[in-house]
Image (cartoon, rainbow, N blue to C red; front, side, top):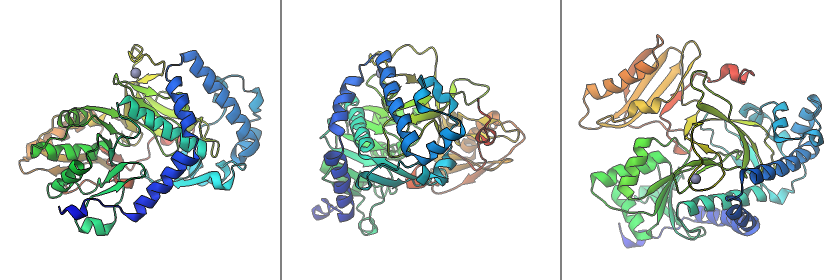
Length: 462
Ligand SMILES: [Zn+2]
């Protein structure tokens, strides 16, 4: 690449980055939260509970006074916020569903948030449900401080340079010139396109990384895995301090491979646009639920395996749109025998992020078959694969082959899939050139068009 084209500052992204950084770093009270979070990570379980309880009381009173959705709901259920005596009493509230949020976002916005301090954002609708959400400066500041703390847990300083691979769309005119990066000086981020990683473009990525020398990568596991693959093929070395992954399910074999190629540890973290719950990885490799961020309930999600839990959470940091007992649609796996984390924090631990509820095949009798990521383990000659369920009776295994692929490779995965979904369904293999991606280029290993939790959404889950 010519030297001239290296320092690309695209005005749009630069301005957005600048505006975003202005809101985050200048207007929002993030420093207060940074100080708080530095201390609160060492609070005892009782101190964390007390903090949650104080926040919850404030939130409930606020919702009852200023949020039309909750004013009506409290009337309907005869709930008096001041009579709620403990976090357990939250259970009297019905679960807030995604479709409620989609249809009634105006009703869920607090009436007393001053317009200049109210930020509207939209989700891409990865699961077919685009949402309109409101945030206030406290929420933005808290989130920023929390992400800085996740970086700190990974050994990355707030001012250090991080390369981002997260579904940002770069301008066409740059892509046409084979430029797949933009540097955002406002927050010292090198933004790389996660859509164009291939054997033809990999040298451009390497060039940008060498030029900007980021100390860490932060992005979708599938994009970072693809990058690692090409680095490995071409025997390229790019040691980093840490890799951070989020937004997609991180497969154990991908984690291992990324750690080997970039010679550092992977810190996987979890959040969502609705910002009701956060799960971050500590230095000792545990997934910690962040209690200061939200009150997380984990009801069982799988009748046959109680270790699978659904995330229902109450956001504690966003007064502009208080979401109480919101069903996120994601699952985690817990292990009741897990001892306290050696890092010393009293934060609850989950075993792993088990993906979205629709990372599951729904069998004709309504059973959910999950944990399908294991079927891809050790698969040879396959560049990518996805399980797709178009309707109740069919499952299609989509495969992107490499040049050494033989039919047996696909058959092996199909056999593992059949062994798990043995319920009179029809299976087929489909060869494709590129894996389909959801909103903002997110990859999902399992996609089902059959509505999961159909009974649950009607009020069935206990
Ligand atoms: Zn820990």
